[in-house]
Image 1 (spheres, rainbow, N blue to C red):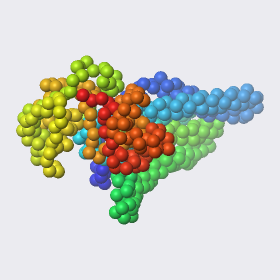
Image 2 (image 1 turned 60 degrees about the vertical axis):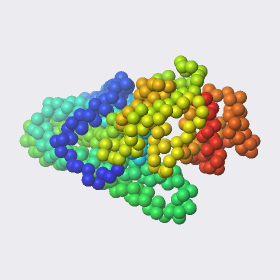
Image 3 (image 1 turned 135 degrees about the horizontal axis):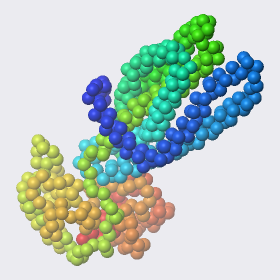
Image 4 (image 1 turned 30 degrees about the horizontal axis):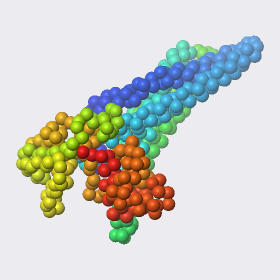
Length: 511
């Protein structure tokens, strides 16, 4: 996916922002009470910090008047301990909730990906789809909880601090807000750049995953062709793009991360100058200036929380955008009750017939037809073969029967019933399908054999092994059926992989 020409933020981004917030709320909603608890504890912790400057002012006033300060010191100590404990429990609650949000997002995304239409999977890169499950969902961790809580606590404590500062001295508050507004305007200009850099970086990570998946999917071919260096350069190019966009995002995050400190430092100098003049003129006591300066430094925390919340949102929005792209891809209906077993069929166990009526198919409008107005009937008994040159459409016929693709025109019937009227699990359960490349999945030989028939017994397996002449292979393997076959069956020969695929189809006892 090339994102080098990603558009800058414009007014057209507002509908996208609404969709992002809607999707974010969908992830957070099941955990809203845990987030609310974390927010409450964070506010309790923030309240402790908010009261400390006032306690300091009271302490200075008592020292000036010669009063006792023991009770003030005790109160301040208790306040610090309580706020620290509250913040610790709040942080744990939020981190736990964030992990739950990521888990829910991954479960939903995995379920959706495995139900995608075959045409969509063929169109997209598997590595890019995998990166959405792994790296993109990770970015939800911060935006789903910390960003929400940071925004809320930052806003509440900032308003509370401003109110108290206004009560202490409105003139000094005006000076402070003027400086903060100038720095805040600069931050607002930088924030969209973080989101753009993050989205481009995540897209590059997807390209890198795609490149690696491409290489490992044909590892022997890569080595036999002496293409290691070329493929390494291809994957490294994607890695460099991810690094470049990541560094660009880090640069803007560094600018934003220092903005709150810059604002407070500039405001401190301005308040110190104006406040010192007001103390010298007798307009305010020195304890007020000290308390105001403490509140000024206290502002760093809520301002930092707000900036961090917006920064996390920019990163999370890029991830949510990529995740929600999968949600709109055409998918097959979910299987609510698991695979259909032969013993569960509500039909008579006679061989199934197939009929094509004026069937045409092409992969997309504007592309040439693979098959056009095909008519034929295959009886339920006997053997029928399709013979023709490569590319004539033989494999396409079977993808239409399985409903991996939908016919562009005409009807495909199994037992006289249009395949579009069959429930997908039931339709596919009556068909034994062996692909040309006979794929074998990583795992044990037993797991591959029972992949389509998880309820098969040992007697069923032995009968199929004898029928496909795999029994001698099992006797040679060090752990028999429980021997690992390697990635894509790399520890088996080509002929053995074909027989495993045939045995897997037979073990399902298709009609």
